Amino acid sequence: MSKVHAALISEHASPLAALGGVDAGGQNVHVAQLAAALSRQGHQVRVYTRRDRPDAEPVVTVPDGYTVEHVPVGPPEEIPKDDLLPYMGAFADWLVRSWQRSGFDPDVVHAHFWMSGLAAMDAARRHDRPYVVTYHALGAVKRRMQGAGDTSPPRRVELERAVGHAATRIIAQCSDEIAELLGYGFPKDKIDTVPSGVDTGVFTPAPGGGPPHRSPRRVLSVGRLVPRKGFADLIAAMARVPGAELVIAGGPPADRLAEDAEARRLRELVRRLGLGDRVRLLGGVPQSRMPDLYRSADVLACTPDYEPFGITPLEAMACQVPVVAYAVGGLSDSVRAGLTGDLVAPHDVDGLAACLRGLLDDPLRRLRYGQAAGAIARAGYTWPRVAERVAQVYRRAIATNRVHAVPASTRYL
Image (cartoon, one colour):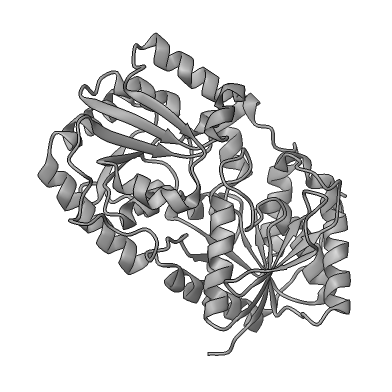
């Protein structure tokens, strides 16, 4: 199989970023792991992300074999991703200059997130290369779920459509996303489905195949401390799950939780429900400690309003931990109801509590679910397997090499 030179554009989600911030989460992990897996398979990979601090090295060679280039557009400081749109034109200009003057000439450009897609669309056209886009989240879904609380730029959906129509290939991460993409008017024959992955060499089962015998039983939830992750629903459900504790990992470091508005809101809910001794917010947990944290849990709970894919359920599954999740987005694919865990309708707090009680009270079912979860994670969601499938998409894009002209209205910039 021919090897490719791939430029991965990830304007806000650096593969080098610390996880847990408002804009640092699954996409950072996805880009880092995909770049590493592609590199290990012999492909040449460069990741382009915006410089967000003044001391960032212009070029960083990562031990996993790929290179990260910090694109110097906008002020060298953290900026909320929803405020980055005005810089995407300069980002595209910088990419074109870089490819013209450097020794790296990409065969294919792979954009991660819609704003990266805008920069990729412009730069790929000018450099005469195909480009692929993985959205990671869609504006139409966010607008539907968050309504007036959606902070996306007003033209997001319009620009997402422009990115997809001009792309050579589109990668969807789950079946639910395919339906949304078809609703955007994209032809089905240029959409490929490739899920995210999990490092099954790091996320492994506990010795003996299950968590330590402990009382109280432990429900774990992992994610950024933002309202859409649904931790308030989960805390409310725990009031109806006696004899169990809830541990929430994510957000700022533990010593800064008191400064975080969402952490304060959740702690106030815990206080009002009288759950002070049964709910703990850990704050951000280093990635190196996450496997042990998963292995300490009897069940992982994942209760977001919407979830384009969701990496944390895969990490738990690889550790042979069963998952109870809301039936949204990619969770409906990765969590196999009745086989690796249970699915609940979003915001059905009574149903969520009932599923948690039933699973916590049935150790044999937990064991059966956990074993099946581990087998499925290892069979279908390893990063080498994901990278192979993404490389196939790259080859199809290179063979097609169809990059449409950028509509004038999208030189927004």
